[in-house]
Image (tube, rainbow, N blue to C red; front, side):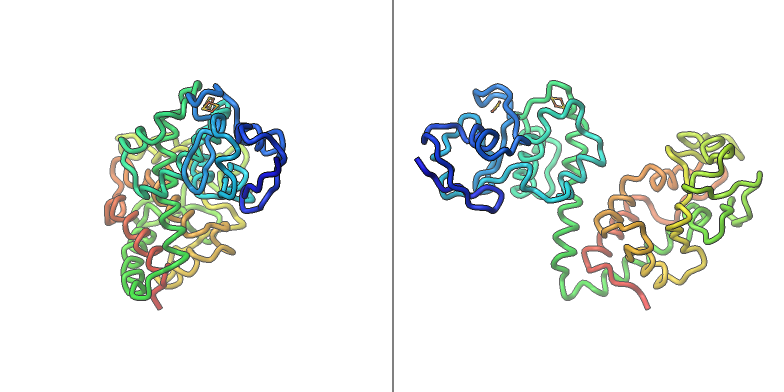
Length: 325
Ligand code: FES
Ligand code: FES
């Protein structure tokens, strides 16, 4: 029997028995193989898709139930795997074998629609029926929190409040105080030699930026900068993947006014094609940024806490990323 089904925004007419599971139709008739077959009895969640926005087990859902409704599969989330949930999944490197992950992602999309800022308990509850035999649950939880932030920022940027400009500009003054602190400005430099110390003196030992920002061959930043700062006076500060911005995107705001720092920070041409959500993600989660608040003995952290910095970045972006003059 010919049935109309709207899959990922396109109306399809499918000639199958009314009792055929939706999963079969998606995979066999439409070639949408991102949705997986796991147990076939609604126990594992691998086959999760959205039906009018609600997560369902497509392995036990007769196609007749989807007639005239909107079905969304993993393929329909985005064209370039850049849906906020997908980006968070990639950033947290959640997948191991990957088999369960499209189901986990679709369940998360539904969760964030119902609860934009879920607690750990809400996440565990919402995803309890999505099993992962590789045990990626901790990374999934981190990715859901990250996706929540990316989703909220994407929404705020799409529809900034008309009254929020002033709050946005004010928030940037806090951001500028952090960017101008020695912890940030010693590496965000226009030349090729990083600075060091509270007095911004030239780095010793003939250190150079290098082709990728990680130092010259044979003199990589990580030769001396370890994974974490040590509480030993004069030991080099540490963070995973210690680096300068690459030479093609220098992000050199040292010496700039707050307004110019702001314009540089929000321009994709100068910030490495980062969206505002990416900028917030960088401020929140990049270990190199977080390490500024653990600089080691004898160094001063930025003038406000990391939490206050992140809150300011969020306020700045949600107000439309307005810049001081
Ligand atoms: S395949 Fe549908 S729940 Fe397991
Ligand atoms: S990543 Fe392997 S089953 Fe979940």
